[in-house]
Amino acid sequence: MHVRGWRLVLAVATIHLVAQVAAVALALGGLARFDGGGPAGALEAVNAWAAAILAVPLVTLVKALPIGGTGQWGWLVLVANSLFWGVAINLVFSRLRGGPTPVGLGAGVSVGTAGGGGEHC
Image (cartoon, rainbow, N blue to C red; front, top):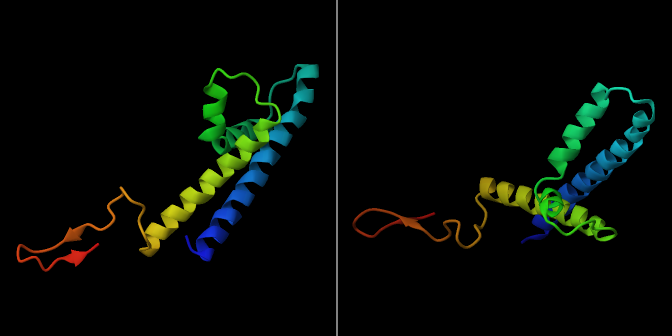
């Protein structure tokens, strides 16, 4: 991966991590509502939706596993989830730019005529 690719991965991962931590912090801030027993407001509903979307796929997967609480390791899961999204976005942009394709996703396939003078994809 080129320097440009790593910059994109780190930028996306940083933005995702900040958004993910902010969503969790806002969710914890909304816990005071339970003392009064009032209904969830529109902002809390939007925050819950955003937190659920940002948690996909790794945080959701770890929550589904029967391993109990993650404690301090939960931060590692948040960072790994953000890095996953950084790599995924970089892969999409790389494919759109016509960059290299990882092995197993069609790299090196020749498309051509019966005469063998194919165009390399």
